[in-house]
Length: 118
Image 1: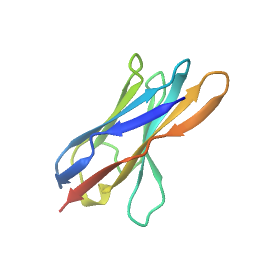
Image 2: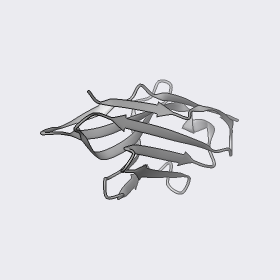
Image 3: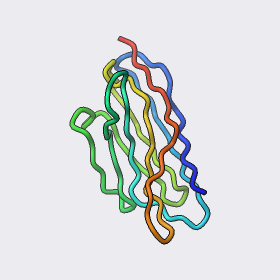
Image 4: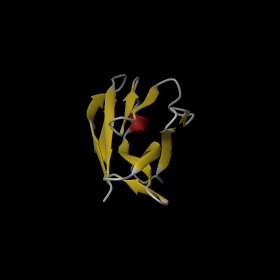
């Protein structure tokens, strides 16, 4: 059974910072690509940032230079450091992990709310 658990959301003023964390667990599984997505009010879910097991990263244009994704492979954890937050960053942030045992499947967390006030 794979579990994906996010933490670290909250309310912050514009220009502030937050760090989101995601813990992945599952006996016998290897976690490959891990990603953060977000879904704002009335919006489709969108990719924010992703990181491979070799720490190759990819960012949405809207967060480049402000957000940093990192991971600890030993702990199966991924973090998203968010700086210079804007009201338009307000969304529910979801962690996605590609978990592999024999085959690979994607697993999602339940999400954590990030609210940025102007």
